[in-house]
Amino acid sequence: MSTSRAAPKPPQRRTGVRAAAAEATREAILRAAMRVFARYGYDGATVDKISAAAKSVDRMIYYYFGSKEGLFIAVLERIYAEMDEAESALALDEARPLEALVELIRFVLGYYRAHPEFVTLLNTENLHRGRHIAKSKKAREYSSHAITLTARLLEAGVAQGLVRPGLAARDVYLLIAAAGYFHTANRYTLSAFLGERIDTPEAVAAWESHVIDSVLRGIRA
Image 1 (tube, rainbow, N blue to C red):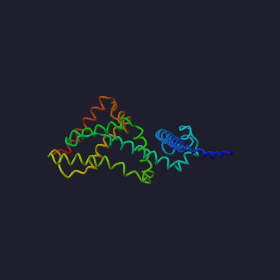
Image 2 (image 1 turned 30 degrees about the horizontal axis):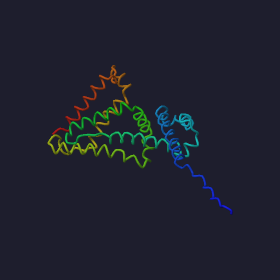
Image 3 (image 1 turned 180 degrees about the vertical axis):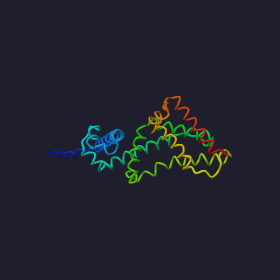
Image 4 (image 1 turned 90 degrees about the vertical axis):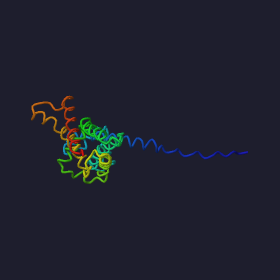
């Protein structure tokens, strides 16, 4: 009596492993590009330098990002997204709007200090008049949370009689961001200009206190 053997099953594709490997390669290129663009600027950061830093090959950059410009746009989107995620993780007590606003100010100033590459990359893009980030479809998404959060704190402050009405959340947030960005971006030239270090722990604490006082004075009822 003959017995029939079941046909062998075709080997399953390891799509999960391949997808994870592809994502790891893309992430390695993106992280390397951040470092290289921050160090050399847009023009000085060549595809060769980026692929070498990522321990990859040039064709993978073109495969995942299309071009050097596409990669730079992805880098800008990533640094904005990471700051947005960090802001979204803040647990602020909106029932105490002024105290919450102080926490937001400290976060923004501290974020710039802790991520100088963020400032450097934005400086690079501003030298190019924002022509790369203008092509991003995601750029405007990243400001929405910060502005919305600031607006809620101001509204709560108005309701409690602590904040004067009519303030634009965008303007208040830009004031905070400008204070943090300018201080970090120009810390070396300002130190030389003023004849004193502005990036020592004592100087940073004094600047943070001054920014908090200035913002609160500007918004109080």
